[in-house]
Image 1 (cartoon, protein in one colour):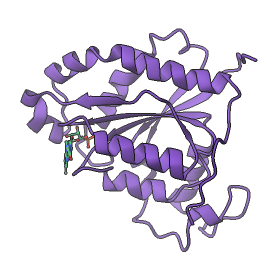
Image 2 (cartoon, rainbow, N blue to C red; image 1 turned 45 degrees about the vertical axis):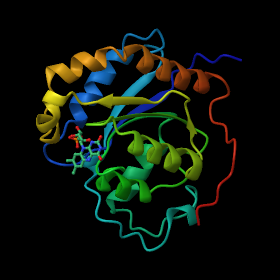
Image 3 (cartoon, protein in one colour; image 1 turned 90 degrees about the horizontal axis):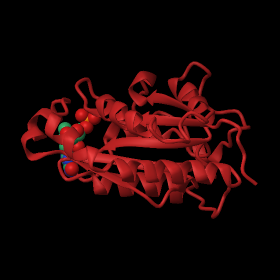
Length: 215
Ligand SMILES: Cc1cc2nc3c(=O)[nH]c(=O)nc-3n(C[C@H](O)[C@H](O)[C@H](O)COP(=O)(O)O)c2cc1C
């Protein structure tokens, strides 16, 4: 049965360094998905990982062993508590991640390690960027959020390749016009991934297809 209840979708900015392209890329993606007929019937909120000021992993155990409804071994004041509650409060996720040296940025991997149950059964759409498009980071994020943390990755994945002339600027956090122009040609893929995400939400909402025990 199709549901018309607005769903909460997080647009996650994974990069956390001072000069970063992440917010520009997130706003570029936001502009594209705002043209979708499904946009107005859902609630899209940008979640910036950097704003949580997470410490280098100092959880005394593994979050997988502490379900969301059980007390966390972290003090209430630990920034990871707010991070976990924020992520848990969404129904689906669009992740915007860069690739650093063939993988996820360390800051985001650190943030992910504070989570486990928050994504369970929920749709996830991964968009990566990089001088080569960030395929490794895209795969790593899909594995972590999908296979390990039991989210439901949409079939479409989008890789945004930074244009040759923008490479240096992009590594300094500035996305050039040429890259934006080329990425504009991927609008259909971005919309396709977004529609798949919304489709999963409307088709039964949260659904756990497979169990994977991380710890
Ligand atoms: C330390 C570092 C390593 C990088 N390694 C890769 C890489 O392995 N593959 C790739 O496609 N791009 C790579 N890049 C390019 C970034 O993905 C690109 O500059 C991206 O815009 C960075 O996003 P951010 O500014 O939001 O951190 C790297 C950039 C940095 C700073």
